[in-house]
Image (cartoon, rainbow over all chains, first blue to last red; front, side, top):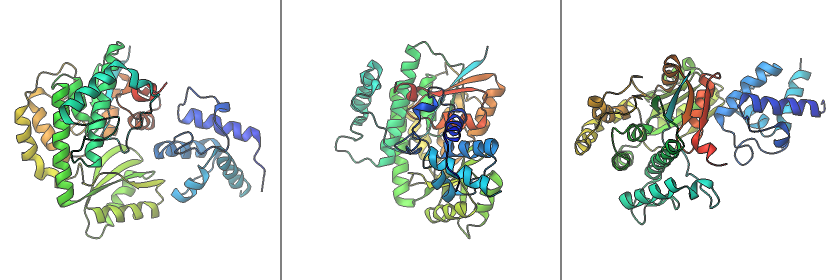
Length: 90
Length: 299
């Protein structure tokens, strides 16, 4: 399994800021392991939809259903791991 | 120069949190209108209760939503914001009308509470539920409706190309949630409502609501209000009929936003506690500016 690197983490944080129009945030303000939903960044299902589209456009990876979405959108690190896993599969 | 729309959201889905250090609590408009609402309805926003009176969760959410929208409206107005047009989603219509001065703050609050109590009673006797489905296009949602084996659900909210709300019988809603997930929805969740709002079954309440509104004198609107059902600005003389009928009709929020953009709106301000409309607008059109007054008040 490929290791998550800082460059990918940074790109994903930027993707979150851009897709969700979080103009007040900078990447270093998003914790890599903090929950994205609920207590953490406080995202919801409409935000998740934006991130699904963003991952598809920017990284070419697909979130096929709600179950995968729940696992992938736990934190920036789980998003990064999913991107790497999907890329390896090609 | 672009135009500004004030957008009044529908019922909150969870109890609003206003911790002791929340900046809104020290705002004079907050203090004044929380007190006026408490005096008129017994509703205590900070304790989310009705001082001993029976009130269900949804009714309290409806009053809280109205009250917070109006507080944010008065704050925006005091800061110099003036809308060119007002839009509204579902029960946001009551605050929208109060903001347009077609009715007073007190009348809007009274209608919110009175209609809320009718819905509460109807929900307790007839039942009903609503489901939010995110991540499926309209065609898939229509297929779900066809696969319900005898249950009939209506599409209550058209919130965007991949976001719909289904409404109707509780068992039908439960089945729809399972079907949505099996059809690969990103999210399928039940909303707090215990009634099928914005479905034709609620048309039985038209007469009762119209009769209730006899006590209200609707004044001319100081700012046009684009309604969520026919996507047209409401005329003063049709407002009572609209209020009595709209609970049995769908909310076409996606079309409202598109219409506003066609009319030159490029700045949308959500006048309420949450960010739901702001996020829906972001999905419908990324080019326009959208923000929530409630979200900004946290800073």
